[in-house]
Length: 381
Image 1: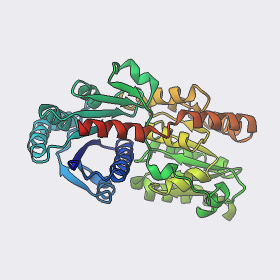
Image 2 (image 1 turned 180 degrees about the vertical axis):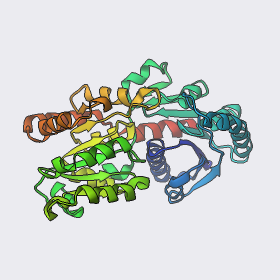
Image 3 (image 1 turned 90 degrees about the horizontal axis):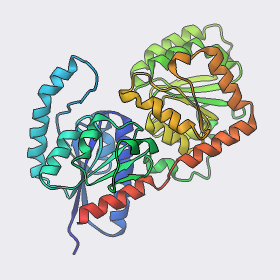
């Protein structure tokens, strides 16, 4: 009889870390269930708002104090330097009582202590880097790992060797499941939009983007004159944005008001939103890029200028180089530039079709499965 496998997961901070981790967990769980192998999942870290996602997958959450490693000057660095030894001690102590067969780390907040503890106990570590420029957590974790998977070709400039594979970025399985009864027109109606008018999906990352929010408030009139928009403003920004939008739209006719809708955060609804939209305006986090790619949507990417290691800049340009997206850097985020690029995509069918085709080619639908297979192999050794 095969032994029960214990699979540990680490990493977090944002949806960009958590959602690929969950995608891999779903694939591992499916494979082990099919082979009738008993297994348990453990999450080592501080799950925060994502705790329900872990609990509904029957994870046992092993709380580890979160300490963020920053590459920039911040008063918070002092506190986190103090917290790190406690995080490391917790990871050593708590892992001793679980002793998983393998650890899968996504990097980000709190991952390094878990990886070091696993290495000490001779537990194999598999890391995945979502961004084109690896984060400091994964740079440190690389030396302690048995296997490494990366999303962008550029990352191979930093990680090399036989243990490194280019596999893309996993996205949640339900996003790529076929929905034959849902097309673009029906999906638009779900959100209360006109099924025939072009719809722009505006994403600022899981936390929203103040810069994008401000720009959109200044340009609502230009958008609703010809298009419709569904804007994820960020949960913490929702009430302020709603109030400011009401002022901006005070003199709009009812039809124009109905063309601009806001939400705090799109969780599972992101699938309907992606199907409904004609073009996506987004930050350039890896998670957003690969979800846009999975749905073959043309996009305008606005990389976050202060992203760690300027990784969003490199993410955006690597994705855009095959024609899948147009990059508008923050310094160039002006009304005339934005609307000229929007028209170029939405009013030129040839351009639109070429961008859609290029977007689809970038996505690897087997990404989670490839990682899951390797993770199971390491666990069974």
